[in-house]
Image: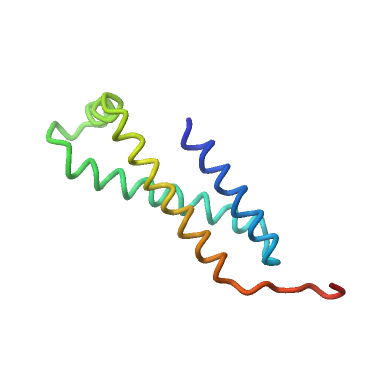
Length: 101
C-alpha cells in the first residue's frame, strides 16, 4: 500500500517539474509511475534471486519478504531509483516557452 502512495507522490513531484519545463504533466506523471514500478520489480527480483533459498512458491516468497522489513524498504528504494531516473531526464530538458510568454 505504501508503494502506491510513494509512487503517486513521486509522480506529483515530477509533474510539477514537467510543468516548469513546459511539458505535459500527466504524461510525465504516468512515465514516473511506470518507471517506479519497473525498477521496483527488477530490484525485488534481484534481491529475491540473491537472498532467497526456499521453494519457488508465491506464498513462501511473500512470507520471506514480509518477515524481513528491511528487505521491503530496500525494494522501495529501488522504486525511488526509477523516480530519480525520470527526474534526471526531466531536469536535463530545456525549458520551452509557450507563445505569449
